[in-house]
Image (cartoon, rainbow over all chains, first blue to last red; front, side, top):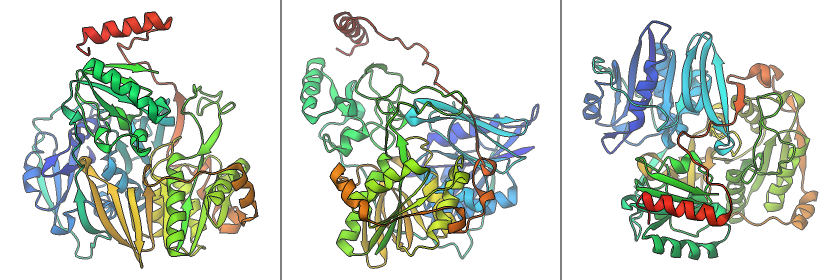
Length: 290
Length: 262
């Protein structure tokens, strides 16, 4: 039976939703008529509490627990995973296409000599390997991509693209893994910085008027402000607007900004890259003005 | 301090309608303009301003065909000292793994303290080449940097991590850092500036010059194939309001009101 490994992302003792999405995607990668074993890979310090919660999703849980893994480090993580892959020979290793996943996966692909399908929004096993759909050109085009072989593939999966379904009987057998003495993270940790709270908390807003680079000029923000006032809405924006210094980071909606869950989202001059739309949660009514 | 910055020229699709080409595995490039990859522009600015502050040399590198020389001329105009154009017909059709291999072979011959790349590219967007290059070169890396400074032989990097947080770490040089947009304010490049920079050294090299095995690049060496490209299906339940402005605005206001947006 095929083994699929899933790298579990967590922060502050809480497992990221991507872990459950990837576990569910993994269940569909068996050979025709056969199930799969889905193994979680957990890296961190004092993570036994996190491991306990994974049993309804994963058949096996490989835990690397060490003070040296307190701070995620893509290079150190790649080294540990490469060892586990060599030992367990998974059909595919799934990694969330998040900031930390993007930091680790390419380094791992080189160490493990594996084909890496990046930022997949679908994934399936095929007769001769593995196949996925991903976006290109900022989401304007979709591409079907594939890699051939009998196993040892790697894929990063886009958060929010796969439905999470529990596997109640999975059980989650714990495997305590040794962290080699020689493993010395190459990054020296200085500090972790939480985003500065803004004057307005857009994560709680019910109606948002969001602007992107399509508004062209900073002066046009005044029109947007008066529109938002008239609607009783808060304003929000995409990354390029923050990069240009037109609005503070606390107004940025997206995977590296604020997650929002409004009832109504009016998007103005926004192309809708997944880095932006990934920050829109729930099922709001979205109107986009081109 | 010597810095190598990897840059790429990409089709400018921001305001364009994109269509699939006749091969079914690419897009029609005919009418599209080209720009420096947005992330790389911030990387070049970071390289140039670090060398202005600390001394040293910036070498801009790209992999591509004849027309891709433009992106190197632009980097030279921004303040890079030298440029290396990695060009060879056999490079065409390489995937991220192949491109990282070409770059790693080429930079092995150039002394450097810091390797910079954009965090992702606007055309492919997987964010793979930078960290793959670091792994091949055997140096540490940090992805998605929003701040970067160097003191002595140490780089201090602020970068985007899990849970909407940012983290500051230090790395011993040599190291590779991938640059996020917004790290700095890339300087303006004028046509005159590009012309003036025409005197700066720009070298071209292919597989023979960098000593690369041609079997490791090109379509035959790809690890991940592109089988087809297609336009994304329209979202279910999506509605496009068309017509004159007056009717469209009235229809939009109507819908916003129904949904509690006004």
